[in-house]
Structure formats: structure tokens, C-alpha cells
Length: 271
Image (cartoon, rainbow, N blue to C red; front, side):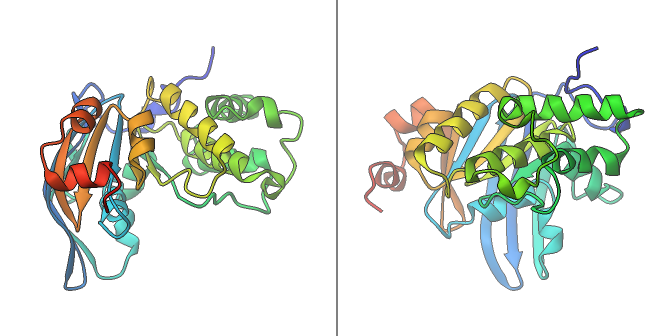
């Protein structure tokens, strides 16, 4: 039986509403680093199986907001989240919610490719399924690894070198390996923080093509400082400036008829 996103889902708790209209709902979310408020009263709804781009200039709070969606801010001393963040209908900051389960359900790819350099390509992808015991046999694990690499459009390039160190891959290949590593955990949502910022145009194009393909099975939330990239890949966009949500909506609508002067200035490169 072919490996699909449904493999390994038996570990997910029944509380997750996998048929929810919205993948993520943020209501009056504010985020603090110590006494500094870096995200201010943001309310957003992100539909399932879409690409949603959070765009804005550097330092606007985009990445901080992204990290709140899978509780990565738990690792930041002094970080505090106020308001409600619901993932597939569940308030992920409610008492009793397991953050490890949240991070399995909500995968993440960072700006800098960060494969484990001394591990093989195969072991980079297999590590998550091993930790979460998502397979019953070596054959099943092999199937998960192949499936994830295929979904990341990397299998054909590495199938004959699976046991080579990940450090031997190019930058673009390493980023796709990180995407495969995230997909191997069978997430419902994939967060991508400036995933092409350090890649050349050819590698960037491959990642963007991959994003378009992946949204058929997962919801993708991407942070970008590039309006052009948001226009190319996103179904919906949100523009954040100095921690505040300025405008959000369908990409074509926001780009052709921005409602706010700040949005228009950002889209036209006036910043």
C-alpha cells in the first residue's frame, strides 16, 4: 500500500479537527519578549490546504508570529503569548496540550538549511519517524523515507546516495532535505520561514514549485520579505508592519486593490 499522509496518523489525538475549515485561527494574539511587545493584537484565519504568506519588512514580527503557531517560542526565555491560537480547532496553549504533539502536527522549515551534517541523507529523514515510532518494520521506514524525499522532489537526485552525509548536498538540496525531514512526520501544516532567502534563483524556483505541489496535502504558511515571492506562491497574504496586522486577504485582491497606504507602499517597494 502506498505511503500517504494518513500513515502514522493513529497517534494523533481525536481532539484535532482534521476536517476543520481553518488550519489555524489566531485571535487577538500578542507576543512579548520580556517587557517588549513585538506582535500586537493579531487576528487571522488561515484556510486549510492553501499557501498563506505572511509578508513584511525585516523586524516586523513575522518570524515571531510564525513560531507561535507550533510553540517554538517555548524555547525562547522570556517569550510570552497572549490571546488564542487554534490549530485544527484546538487551542494549542491550553492546559494539558502536549507541545511535542503540536510540533509533529505543525512542521517547520527554517531560513538556513539545517540538516544534521554528520548524518546520512536517509538518517536525516528517518530520525523523526524513529523518535515517534511511526513504523512497524524497516520496510515501512524505507517507504516513509522514500515518500518524503519524493514529496520534496529530491528522491531522483539522491536515491543512489542515501547513505552519504547530508553535508555533501548543495544548498538547495539541503533545504529540500529539510522539507523532506519535516514531511516524514506527516504534518497537517508546514511553516516555512524565509525558506529561499539564502538560495540561488534556480533552487528558489524548485522550492516554489514544490510549495505549489505540497498544498494539495498540507497547509503551508510561509514568511517572506519579498512581495514578488508572495505573489508567485500564495493564495492568501497578510501584511505585517511593526508587529501589527495591516491587511490580509486573497493575494490577487490585496495586490491589485490594497486597502491601506502602508500595504501599497510595501508592494511597490517604497519602503
